[in-house]
Amino acid sequence: MMMRKILSTALLLLAGICSLPAAASAQSNSFSVDMEAEPHVTVFKEYNLITLDYIFHVVNTTNAPISLIASRTKNELPSPDTSTTVVCWGDLCYDAKQSVYNANLVEPGKSPYCKVTVTLPIGETECANVQMTFGVEFTSESVARDIVACAPTSTTGVDEANLVTGVKIAPNPAAANPTMTLPTELQTAGELSLNLFTIKGAKASEQHFPAGSQSVVVNTSELPNGVYFYQIVAGQKEARGTIVVAK
Image (cartoon, rainbow, N blue to C red):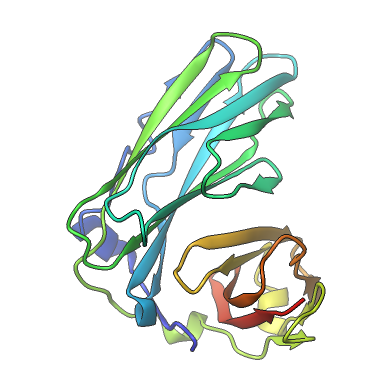
């Protein structure tokens, strides 16, 4: 059940996946907003789905801490049954149905972590239109940024050298939070991101761990029972597989 395909950077530019360029920044009196030019795309070939991760940098431009807030102010999806939008803001990743997110106290020059994941069927002819609005808590300051995400018409292979095997999960099925033991290639590749997806391709959770971690504990406390696909990314290295939650 391993998914072995992702899109290359060149394909993203040709396939009609649109976003505002990174150079096109927006700024209020207290913060600036930049969106990375290209999303990271993962293909769930066997389920005919893709996920597109858009990264935002919302930077405090003042000389004092401010409380930044975020909300999803537009979420027009072409296929509601198979399309979702999940937002990670600060230390939390929110349920796809939630559109208003907790405030984050941000130091000068810093930005909360912000990722917007759009899931679409491969071959979908209509695009998803998503808008994120950022602001300062208890003020009228706000900046809105739009995402237009379109499904590609074809896929291409990833360099097989970047795909890592040897992740060990115990226990699996997991009645509680299982431990993943990581191969050396992942330990030494950089900071780790662990993503869990449902069998429909919607992101269920996201966790981050420091580089050099020999093992990680998967937080399954808020996940319903079922089969999930995991994706571990460290630098250019990536591992994928399945995990079963059975409480």
